[in-house]
Length: 117
Image 1 (spheres, rainbow, N blue to C red):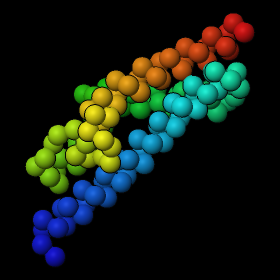
Image 2: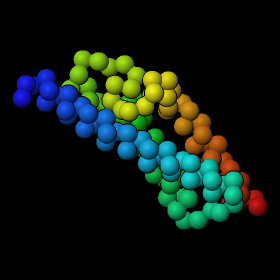
Image 3: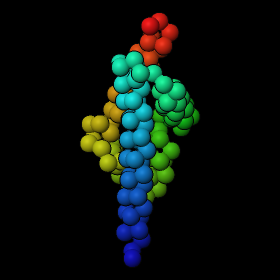
Image 4: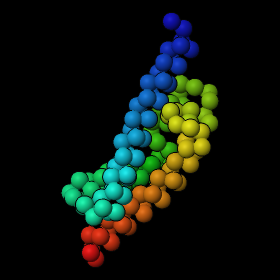
């Protein structure tokens, strides 16, 4: 097998991994939102909030880039939006903004429910 095929295979594996990790965090954010809106706040709601919070800290530590993205840079010359994940280009470009706002809204709803209702 040529080295180019090996690199492409590794990039595909990283894209699959990155997509699954991204989906897990999106599900945690969605679960947090659901918990707040439905007033079904449980311990798992706070675990989701903490997991996403620590993901945000990790992203900040790596200059707003996912560590998987930094590894993927080694396997291709292409570095545009979505080169390292299976997402539509628009979502790949703006996913941090979209889901950070959704996360903050979700946390505010949960906190309002937990503290005042």
